[in-house]
Image 1 (cartoon, helix red, strand yellow):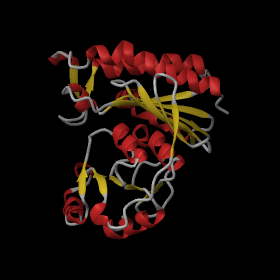
Image 2 (cartoon, helix red, strand yellow):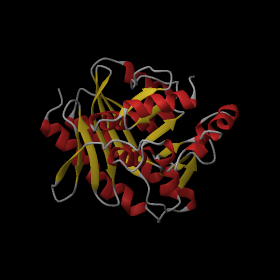
Image 3 (cartoon, helix red, strand yellow):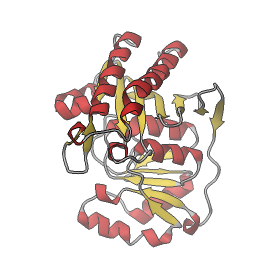
Length: 275
């Protein structure tokens, strides 16, 4: 069971590492300090690698029995991902979510951290280094918006608009194959606006704040979703795969649909179609 002291230590670790390893490189990266991984727009920087190493080291001290799964560690060794399915405590780290934005000087990036116990997410953190604030949740204890001065505000979703034409949503079209992109594109005029931030951290933050009413995502990287799904559900949101299955951090395939209410989720799932 994760204690309050351990939770606070994890948060303070992320804040300290962001200050030491992430912020100094923002808008200050040389060409040789940015690499591509699986595609030209799938980037990694020296800040990603340094931040993940620093957070991982601190996690070992805070939770010595925990396994650690970092995005960059998985990029280097795919077998690391199998730790998510193991019993016990697993800490998931995305050292810089939205690296493309970060590398191009756009301040829409963040740090995501989740703690999984026996396959279930029990703690999630969505941290914004630029403003030193974060959204967090512990399983069964609600979602909180937290500021550097110590203020903590409970978060609860308001009912979404009645009409789809008044809804805002995130749809990551580039995460779907060409056939599905064409199908989804035909649905987009039904909404007020759809977009993508290229950053799961800030998409989940805006979803939880009620600024957007839904998100359809075609990739289930655990570092993108474990924390955000818990936080969104703790604020009253609905998150399931498009085929109706409950989300689990161990899942690798499927399309994840989040929505601000059960009726909206049902309406959207029918509109977007099943798997």
